Amino acid sequence: MSVDPSKLRILAYPAEALRRTAAPVAAIDETVRRVAERMIELMHEADGVGLAAPQVGLPWRLFVTGGAPVGGEDLVYINPRFVRLEGELVASEEGCLSLPGIRAEIRRPPSATITATDPAGQSFTRSDDGFLARVWQHEQDHLDGVLILDRMTPIDRIATRRAVRKLVLAAEE
Image (cartoon, rainbow, N blue to C red; front, side):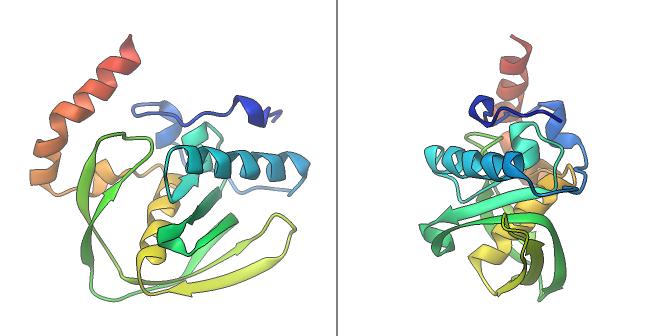
């Protein structure tokens, strides 16, 4: 797949790419590295803490994280997978760069260990018992075509119905 990273933009719901399951990245080449760099730029421009490849229209199992709440360090996760998710589900407010203006309480395990490959082709494993573990789970959901809309309580679905409808109408224009 030929990709021009400079043309990548964050897609808004209901873009079809947000609902597709991403495929593993077969080879880490210069295009993958440039896409990851562009995704980091887009994430920071939008004041986000994570961004997944499906959110920029790419069907790749890749996401990036960064910014102050997650330790400030920009990281790239290629073909990530969870080694461990533990703990009683904890509710915390989440937003999504593909669902601007929509926030909801989402329940997730508080502790996670993830393994992935970096842009240099090196495997790594990280663990977290807080906010970063939540970010990983949110971004991993994107790789599986899952949005916070799917994890909301019925009350939050009702509360955000108007904002979701606005996004749908804007996409139809």
